[in-house]
Each structure stands twice: as C-alpha cells, then as structure tokens.
Amino acid sequence: MKGALVSVGFIPLVDAAPLIAAQEMGFAAEEGLALDLVPAPSWASLRDMLAFGRVDAAHMLAPVPVATAMGLGGSGTPLCALSVLSMNGNVIGVKNDLARKMRDAGHDFGFSDARAAGEALIAAAGPGLRIGVPFPFSMHGELLYYWLSALGLPAPQGVEVRTVPPPLMAEAIASGEIDAFCVGEPWGSIAVEKGVAHLLLPSRAIWQGAPEKVLAVRAGWADDEPELSARLIRAVWRAQRWLFAPDSRALAGELLSRPEYLDMPVEVIDRALSGNLCISPDGDLRQVADFVTFYKNGASFPWRSQAQWIGYQLAARMGLDRVEALRRSERVFRPDLYRAALTPAGATLPTASSKIEGSIDQETPVASGAGRLFLGPDSFFDGKTFDPSRT
Image 1 (cartoon, rainbow, N blue to C red):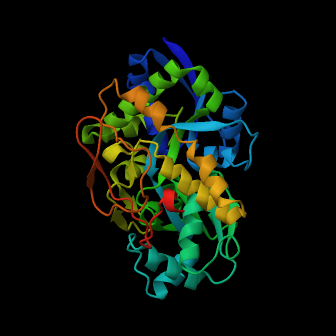
Image 2 (image 1 turned 135 degrees about the vertical axis):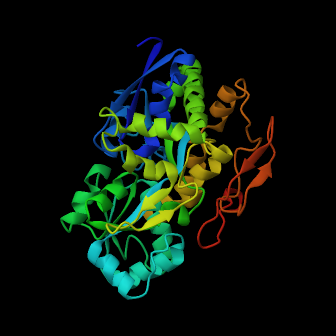
C-alpha cells in the first residue's frame, strides 16, 4: 500500500460499498491514502474497535455515535460522523408461517405500504412478537419502534426486540429464535435464498430519508487530524459519486462479492444495488426505487437534524431528557468538517446544516453554495415531520 495508512472497520454489508470502492477504485490513492479495510464480526465489536483505537474510522450505524454522546453503551469515547455513507437499504422480513398467515388474511405483500404491512403484521403475529435487529442502537431498531408504536403496538413494551448480528439473521429465524427481522442487505435476501423468510417491507417505506450508515471516527481523531479527515471525506465522497453512475453497478457488485469483503454471489448483492428484490422463496419480485442511496440528492451530507431525530427517539424510549438529547446529538454529525473538505473539490453543498425532517414529498431545490442541489423525498409513512427547533 502507498500513501498514509488509515484503518477502517466495516461489517460485510452492501452499504460498506463506498469504503470498498474508495480503496479498490483508487479514490483513496488520489487523496494520498491507503485504506486498510478491517472486517468486524458485530456492531459492538466494531464500535469498540473504533473507540479504543484499533481502527481510525468505521462504517457505523448512524445511531451509535449519537447514543455514545448520550451516555448509552460503549466506553464513552466521543465519536462523530464525518459523512453519511448510505441512506436506507434495510429490509423487514417475517418467518414463513407468519407470512402465510398474513397472506391468508388478505395482505398482498405489495412491499410499499408501511401502514398496511404493519397492521397486517400486528394482526397476524398476536402478542409476543419477537423481532431481530443487528444492534440495540440502530436505524433498524429506531424505525421499528417508530413504525409499530404509530400503529398501536408500543415498543419495546409490546414487542420483544433481540440483537442478532446480520450474518446470523437467517439462522435465527430458521431456528425459531425470532419471528421477524429488520436487517441490511444482503442478509434479508440470504434469508429468502435459504427458504426461511419472506420480505415484508423496505425500511425506506417507513422513512424515506433515513441515514443508515455513517463514516464515524473518534471526535478527538477528527480534531487532531483535520487534513487526514478531509482527505478521507473526499475519497469516500468520490466513491459514492462513482457508485451513483449506472455503469458502475456491475463492477461494484463484483468488488463487494470478493472473499475479503462480502464473500457471496454477485447476483444476491445486485438485488440491493438495483432495487430489484426477490421477496419470497417462490421468486416473487418487487422493484424499489432508491432502495439504497449513496450519493443522489446530497445523500452523504450529515444533517444535524438527522442526528437530532435519532437522539430524540432514543431519549423518548429510554426515558431521558429530550431537550438535553437534542443538545448532545446536534454536535455528533459534522457538516462543518464535511463542508470544509468538499468545498475545494467543487461539491454542490447545502447552505443550511439542519432541516425539517419529513417535510419533502418530492424532489425539491434548496439553497446551495455552488451549482444546483435537489433534495429527495424524506417523508415519514405517517405524514409527521420533525423540526428540532420546535421540539
């Protein structure tokens, strides 16, 4: 490897693509970096690897740095998010007999209507629904809590949420340990391939604008290494721009499929990259536009309001002070560092660092420092909005 070595931890998921592409396609080298991509067995391990300096940066669940700032879990080492690596990209799946019960009751598995899917799930599952998520502080968990609570099944009181590492989700549902799951791709598709689950809903049907993974570093590292942080942000941003190009999809799938990364068939990985998902062992297909987004509509910008939504949700379910949660979470996503790194690269960036989450129902132009920037839809399924300045 040539260039300054930066170690980056990751979990074998499709949304690790920006980091893998940054190294494999030469975007890191263009910034004088060499990324040492280190796989981790679980999100808890990866969080600790970052907190204790085993790696310099990490592919991280967006809520983890926020939870850490609120004193929830981990060593307490302050973390921050330099950029958003991906938006959306999770699937909710149910075990086969629960899927049959839902179909018998008339649910069509249309894969787009979160209200209909949630009401059908609650009715079919009855009391004691057990759902697997990859980590207690994850968008998987926060979206499930938001979705089911809005439909009358308060979580965690009314549903049992269990932590299962993504690669073990299919095994957990096959063994009867859980009834359903919310997990990042390709692990939902793997459960379908193994014939043990049906996919019920993409997570973007709950919140179209959910930040899923972030490029996380220790807050102290970002302060001590501003030039290195900026080079890392730019390398990953260029990789995200490359992933957005339709011609990149085939090669991206091949890179991700390599043994050192996801180590699985290209055709399974391509389902997430294309949004063409197989939802049942019988081969039913559903097309999901923007199933996972790396670059489109400024997806990688770390909005402070996204971190505050996460902090507010965590505080609500953990019984913490919500005003204090907003104050602490506001500092975690770093649009200042992102803007400083990418302005010299000519990126089109919003002039604001916070917005009303859930308020955009169609592609909308916003004020930007250069060029024209359009933000994509970010609606919640229940039509609510989140304005941190009025919360």
